[in-house]
Amino acid sequence: MDNLAISPYLDNPNRLSDVIAAIQAMGTYKFYKLSFERWADRISGDGSEGEYWKRVFQDHPEFFRLDSARERASLVWRRQYEKRYHVDREERLSTEEYNALSDAEKERVSRDPLTPADIKTLLDTAISLHSRAVEFQRERSWWKSPLLSIIGALVGAIVGTWLHW
Image (tube, rainbow, N blue to C red; front, side):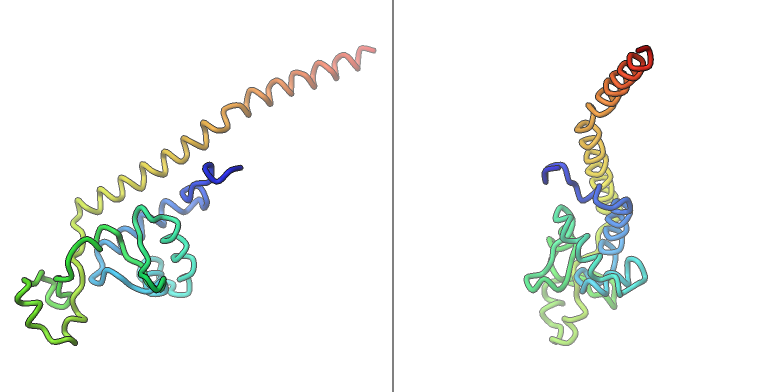
């Protein structure tokens, strides 16, 4: 089987649900970028599954990105927002308010969480990509059923002929 036939959505029967869970957690959590272990804890409740989640993030660049050190992941959509969301105040800061913060307090500033409509858009996209991967896999194997029928008929004919001799 060539690489075009292998979709990350078909790699694991739980992949779609994992992508959906990651989108929801990463889209709404107060900090937009965390280590794989911290995302694993937030998404599945088990920080020891960091390597598994790293693979999910790497396999789905349509939704997730790793930082340049390849140690933390974020949702692509959230990376497009400026860092102006104060996680403790749960409000967006103006440029002036942000510039007035101390360096320590700037550590408590992240990118805006996604809206429910944004998350729905990403979830619909994931479901659509999964459906297309399943359909593509089905289309690639259209010939199996007719071939097996022909082989069955040939075997039946050969066995029938052999039994009559």
